[in-house]
Length: 225
Image 1 (cartoon, rainbow, N blue to C red):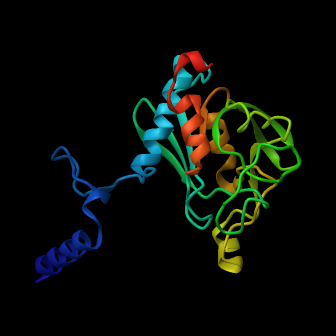
Image 2 (tube, rainbow, N blue to C red; image 1 turned 180 degrees about the horizontal axis):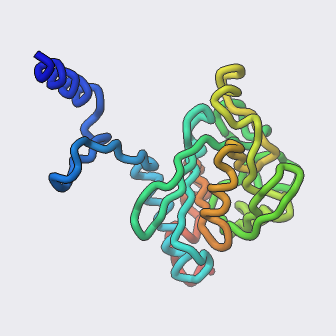
């Protein structure tokens, strides 16, 4: 009787999870399936990889770590991934805030202008860390002319914030918003920063037609650099 109940429970779990979410064991030493780490949507990941490989070929990013932010998703969903590009493993999948003047729950407008309090898209390089008004933070350099190259002048940094949490979402129906920074949960911000600092790539996506058509990192035509 106990064996039948156990079999029923296992079958129920298999039907409750999509096939793509289960990795089958490769040897007899593993006794149960393991949930696969979620990854960015294939189209977004394809563009992020193109930009990363282009920048790596020009030694503009120095570490095999790629952070992908998909700003086409609402702030209530985890939309930041940190990926080890050597192993193809997702190391973090996290909530991330956008700028207060970019939209409410969804980011809809983006800017490279100092004082705009909007998010910037495009490819960035993660730089040095520092202790600032938000605590342990990470400066970024925008690599795309006219798109995000004012990031340092705008103080667009990665930092932790109390308004990035599930409890904030429960109260307000969305995350809080920054002045343009990709703010993270305080509980993970230091770990994420230490993983990507000193030369990692940060790819911030939104389906902006002008940027998608004009970004030199999405075509890697060396004559455009």
